[in-house]
Every structure is written in C-alpha cells, then in structure tokens.
Image 1 (cartoon, rainbow, N blue to C red):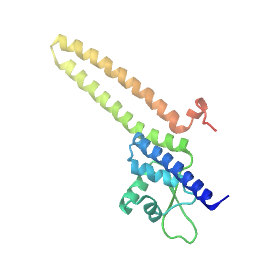
Image 2: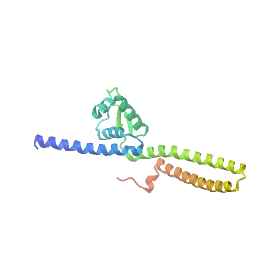
Image 3: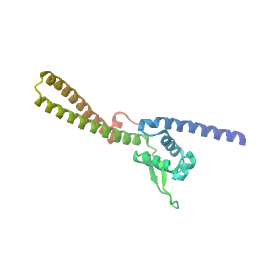
Image 4: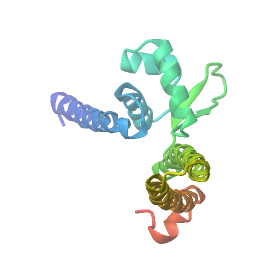
Amino acid sequence: MTEDKQNQDWEKHEETIEQFIQTIAKNMNLYGLTSSVGRLYGVLYFSDEPMTLDDMREALVMSKTSMSTGVRALYDMKMVESTFKKGIRKDLYKSEEDWYKSFTSLFGNRWRKNTESNIEEADEAIEELKSLYDSTDDEVLKERINRDIDRLEYARNYYEWLMKFIHLVESGKIFEYIPKNK
C-alpha cells in the first residue's frame, strides 16, 4: 500500500468518525444537552484512551471552562466516568460504553423528577378544587369542578402508571421485555 493511499484511508476514517460525532451532537438535545457537549461525548467515545480536560480542549478547540462544565454534565448523567492512570496526576475521563445504562439512568432521572412534580401538582389542584366545591353555592361551578377533578384524577393515574414504567426502566427490568440488541 502506498503512503498516499494509506493517508487517504486514514482521512476517510477520520471524516466518517467526525460525521458520526456530528450525529451524536445533533441528538444531544434529546437529553437536554448542547451539541458541543454531544461533540465532547463523541470524542471521548471514540478515544482509545481516557482523556484529560486539556486533551479534550485541544481536540475540540473549546475553553477549559466549557470543557469542565460539559464533562460535569455528562458525568452527572453517567455518560462519562473519571478514571485513573498511574503516573498521571490530572483527572482522566472516559465515556460510558454501555449506552443502555446511560439511557436508563438519564431517562429515570429526568422523567422521575417531572412525573413526581406532576403528581404533586395534580394532588394540590384536586385539594384546591375540593375546597372550592365545599365553599361555593354555585351549582354550575360544582358540576364543572367535579368534571375537572375527574380529569385531574385521570391525569394522576396516568402519572402513577408512568412512575411504574420509570421504575421498570431504572431497575433494568425493561430489558426482560425489550432485550438489548447484541
């Protein structure tokens, strides 16, 4: 193989990986992250070795502050983990290779918070409406309150079902029903 051909092959490889990293970056908004954090994850994912913040900054031409913030966000979502290498004093990071694990953690954290909040809001609205029902003499309003309480109880039941689903995802039992692809 000629040196030119070898260089072309390596360039093609780099272009292909870069295109996929761009795809990861575009889809990070699904996780509530910016595309620059997505690029950071992609670079870590395709790195054969753990990287320091300096390594990442050099690879992505981003500020160290942005890099640190991005790594922290990915770490909180369990998409990267810190690691150690003898002789290196700086913090090293590597991507979580198990995307199923990352998804279940992220999905659970995000959906649990919102769903718990929705249950609390529904409970508060039901209590407020019940109190209003007891204090009003307006029969038309009482009918409306009853309909709205029924709607709120339906919503609350849905959120309770959703909490069961979230638990199924967080516990990993979801994979008993929808196995991971090999």
